[in-house]
Length: 369
Image 1 (cartoon, one colour):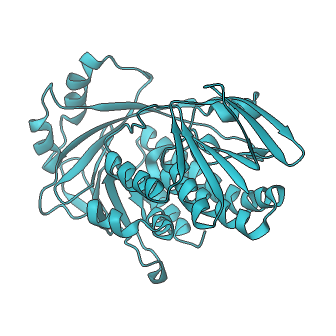
Image 2 (spheres, helix red, strand yellow):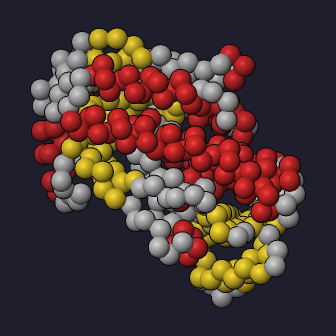
């Protein structure tokens, strides 16, 4: 069996590693000739840590990032209110939550790809897909061609693969929220994630290493774009009135601070997530907002399950049907729960109501894949 994975981000690299572990011949391509990664840090839920453990990278992630337990909910003034548990079954052998710098996670996964000798071609994309009886002929942007048993689109929320096989599929829609992120120093006493609820925006931070954490602000706004020159003033204004550690961080923000601003988009792609022998995983199939910190996790789970089903069935159509049966409900739950939390945040719902959805969803995700 020969598989092409389009997109070498978290989901695509995870698919490459998982397929290779099952003895399946796999090749990755990515449109970026430099194979870059964007963003500050990434929060990792317990179920995602379990998926990374099954992929074989948990120990390196634990060493180079952060793992811990629980989410501390605080008032706008910075006073602790209560802790939300992040339980995982003991047999999973992982912590309840974590965080890591995106470039570090990219280094871990890409290192495994290269160490395994998995082929990666950069700076190219798929121009054409032609399906025949038991194969897919692929035409690449560099003029080359290839024949594969399966093509996997792991090319993100704006997936070109999705448009190629489902030209009438929904487009990403702005949810009404945008997220701001900065990287900052991690005080010694910060040993878990924090939420600051009850104010005009949701503020929080996640440790990503022994010395760093990232702070985020989820803002309700009709504005989907910000000029780079206005980021600093708007960001410090959003943090005005918050106390505790947030006030300390705000005081250290300068016009030179790197601020990442991103509008949140999502949509529901109706099943199936494949057409013939071309399948979608991760954000290409079920893009979600970050409220549950599980978008990357369900992409890694997709990779693991797809590899398992291909190895088990040895027949691509049967494997894709089995994959969808195992994945659709769980991924839909993550998307729906994340969007629900975002809606409650925008409405200014009581903190207890917001965190109840988080706690219920994390417990659900702790169940077996």
